[in-house]
Each structure stands twice: as C-alpha cells, then as structure tokens.
Length: 273
Image (cartoon, rainbow, N blue to C red; front, side, top):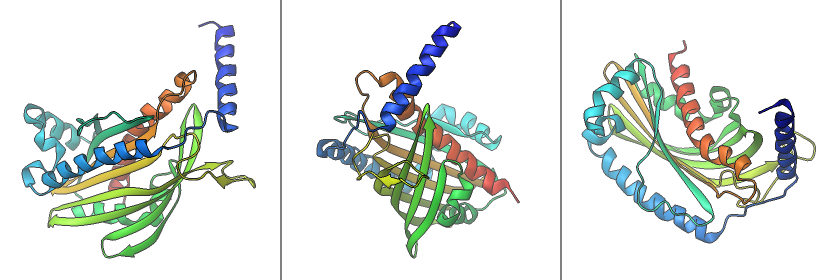
C-alpha cells in the first residue's frame, strides 16, 4: 500500500473510531442472545463439573492423548499455551458471538495455595493485571465465595472501558487441587472514561464489545510446581454491516489475547519475589 493509501486508511480508522465513540452503530443485548449464551454455558458447566471431579481429567493438558507429553514439556519450559476450546453444543448465538478458549501456565516451586491466594486478592488485580485492569476491589467475601468489581480497558484499533461485577466460588477438590467458577453479573460500557463527563451505559446497551465473561479456573500442584488453567467463555456483539473490518479484530482477537495476557501476568506475579 502506498503512502496515500495508508493515509486514507488512517483517516477511515480515525473517522470510524470517532463515529463509534459518538454512539453510532450501537448493539443492544437482546433476550434471545442471552438465552443462547446461557444454554451454552449450562452445557459447558456440566462438562466442567464432571472433569473437576476426576484427577485424570482435572487438567486440560492431561486429556490431550499423544499431545500430552509435548504440551506439559512446553508448560514446564515457561510457555503460556492458549487454544480454542472444543464447542459445548451449538455456538449459534443470534446477534452475538461466543468465544471459548482454554489456557494454561506452569509455575515451578510454587504451591497451589500461592496461586489461589493471588487470584483471590481482588484488591490487587489492578496492579497485577495492569493496564488491562485499571480498577479492582473486593465487594464482599463469605468464606470461599467472592463478589468483586473490575474496570477493564481494552484496545484493538479502538479503546473500550468496561465496568464489571463478578461472583466467584472456589472449591478445594483435594489438597493439591482447587477450582473456581467466576461469572460476570454486570457489565456496563463506560463513556468518556477518566473525564468529567464520564458515565455508564445501561448494561446491555452500548457497542457490545463484551456482554458476558465467565472464567473457570483450575489449580493443580504437581511436578514440582503448580499448573494454572483458565477456561473463558465470552459473549460479544455480532459483526455490524459495513464496520466489520474495524470491529472484527476487537471482538475476535481480544478474548484470546486477554487470556494470554492474564495467564502471563499470573505466572510473572508468582515467579517474582
């Protein structure tokens, strides 16, 4: 592409970003979209519930058959491995897109309790996971059940700020195995974040870059360290006509990249003194 072509493309990107920021091309969340997402999650959680009860299926890498040895070796070398998860039933979501990924890291020399304590320290998530998480706090804790707040900032050509609330339930399956179900209970887009005119859209209204976020964590102490696995199921808007080239990288690439980033930061935080 020549210089003039690049200039035109930059102008188009800037114009579309301004148009989106001004509120055009909104995508409101409909009941049929929510219903399809909830059906998918129900099937996925039944499968997860069966896996976490069995030591041999607790860790995703252990279910990979001939690939198991290679994946475990890569994890023990310090890699972050993220792959698209097999579908749990129909992924057909009217007016929406469903994103389902699984990722794992391994931290040598750390106990399962270290990893769980890190993830439960929601007041520090804005430090551990910056710049993707810019604010965080625990709202309530009752035993191993948490309610917490996160403000996300995500950027892919355009930047989006989201206020979100979540509920987390941690369960100890055995001394070396812990798992958690974390479900978003409220997601609202923030308009003009960080300015005097900052305000929230009503949940389900706005541009629909993320409507739901469920994460399912597993912590396994073995092989001289702890494996940390996260399975994420995210709901976003479908592609808008005419702006798909701008929106598609955001809603299709951000879920995977966010999971890579999150697991990488977990590993770094546990490795650090």
